[in-house]
Length: 239
Length: 257
Image (cartoon, rainbow over all chains, first blue to last red; front, side, top):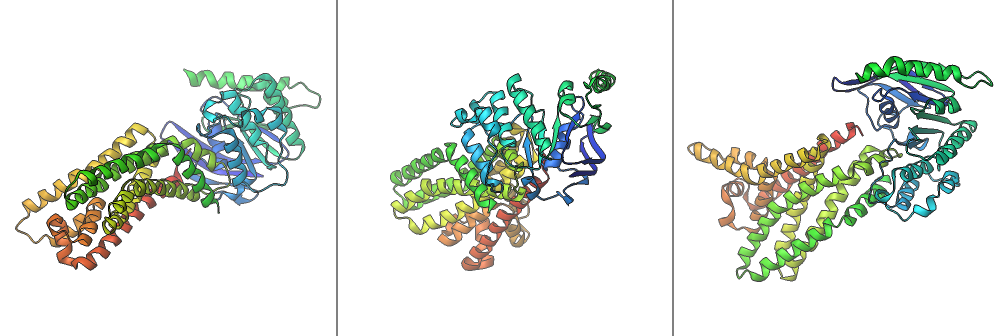
């Protein structure tokens, strides 16, 4: 379980992330939503240790992550823009990641095979299209038997076929009792995948809602709620 | 364990960038040319000393910072894996320093051995290694503090100009205006604050080329004698190697990606 307690992270006067309390339990798909610049990626990066909060703390399975790195054996991350070093080949990126992480007897090659990663192994990351880099990133995020998978806008840049494969994989992971934490702007995606929605605005949690899907429901109520949240908040931000 | 792996990734990435072999070939051509065409061995040595003292720090500052800016994605990728920031920083710092040391050895030290300047070569090697690690520490410090590449490289060129050019001017200014006062201790402290000056003093004391000491070198020798002076200069160079890299590591520990 991930527990976020009273974290504060400021970027000058323009933006402050302030999360009083947020608990993320395993066996669920939890979606962070919100307008651009609302703090979703900053929160994910704080959990991964890429961003260092000024106050507060984050624990993973009860252990404070500050200054720690071993906990990242439990987490796999698929970033928004897959920032792979342009001069490294796909093969090298995979082998470095395998080399650093805890050794496993069996790696999960399902996405690796379905996304045709074999055919791009000899290509440099800089020569790959955005979509192909995303597929490589997804294949890496699901390759290890991690208890937590963090996905930042995972379907952005993916073709519809690859998106469906990825979504099916997310559901499979949830059924295996893992925690999937993702961000997205696509409302339908949330109603298809999520068990819980955390809506963020200006660095704060505005709505945190469980079980919005009624059994057998089509998620209409949820879609209306999210649309309302965006309609209320996004135009004001853009003016 | 992870430090060794991370060092390996950074080192192979740096070697692949072609900067390092080009740097080695250029230094080799320059050093061989100076030795071959110079009739006076002493003069050739002074020219090479100036290259080591002035050109090497400049190249370290530029290469170290540009590499750090360009490897942002690589660092970010590593930091999402179970590795400590300390290992990533040390891996990058050591691989930058050792790859440039390899170029320096092949480009400048090898020709000195070939032309039988072996003792001097060992001295230049020691001073060169100190300068390489000191100025890579500065390069990582500034590039971890400032996200804008152009601004960061500009500041580092100003750092180089300060140590290589302006600092001597400031010292001369001080000697001229306070010529009537005893300045020995002040001179030693002031020259200790410039790693280029300390590296020059270290070599000069060992070679005992009194005509080339300059004021600071002469004061160093008078105050400590040749033997103790060398040890003091080595100690100061060690401090210079540690301090900027420690600050750079501290900055890296708190850096957001």
